[in-house]
Amino acid sequence: MNVFFFTITLALYLGGTIAYLIYLLFSQERAAWNGRLLLGLGFIVHCLNLVTRYIEAGHTPVVNLHESLSFFAWAIVGFFLVLRHRYRVDVLGAFVSPLASLLIIWAAILPKEIFPLPPPLRSYWLPIHVTFAFLGDGIFALACCAGVIYLIQERFVKSKRVGVLSQRLPSLEVLDEINYRSLTIGFPLLTVGIITGAVWANYAWGSYWSWDPKETWSLITWLLYAALLHQRLMVGWRGKKAAIMSIVGFGAVLFTFLGVNLLLEGLHTYAQWSR
Image (cartoon, rainbow, N blue to C red; front, side, top):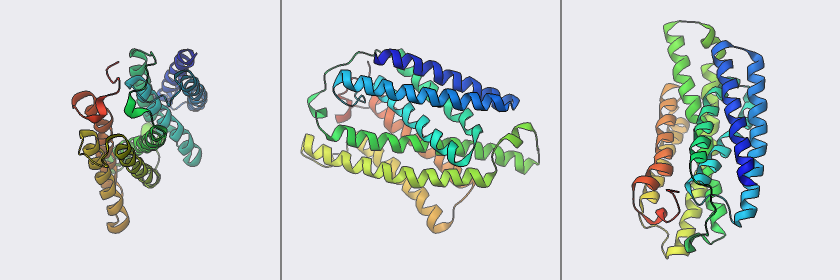
């Protein structure tokens, strides 16, 4: 049943992506409405997919690459729907929905079998640690997308080219506000994710910190966002610098999530990442 819901989620996310890209390219308000509807329906069905997989597996569905990619996409779309409701920025969907769709397509290519949990994962810390970590990563994805849009809009403003695309993009002030709000939400979530991960590591391996590649890159990512938050609060960083740092930070997020597990050996490679 979970695969059935997953397939419907994939179709709805792809439909939402197409609708939002039509809105971006041709400025059709109806297409933006369709994009919101399809992504909203996709998110609801995605929730059903995660719930049914949880029931069938007996554990939080985040222990292999298929499940993790799906959960990551779920977090991204969920936060987008919340931010879109708050800021009414439809064009953000044209950047967020392709990212979520790519993650879901990648997950769809991978085997979807449910495997027994490895011994270190049989802990109540699994849903706590992973949920906070992925929620933080999800909101950072939106900060990255807002940063990309900011750089595009700033280029239009500096060149004094006011075209159709420029008029559809949000103002620099709104984009900077989204970037900042995403940072203030994502950073505490990431912090709690790292702390609960350390507690879980002590429970599973007898040490809070072992400089495993995953732990090291999680710390690097945390330091990047901590530096960005510090610069914004204490130095007054805004605009282009903050946008670039948000993009760099999300690059670190992606490497921590995917690069470490696929390329580096460590304690966090016990899960079925290649399946």
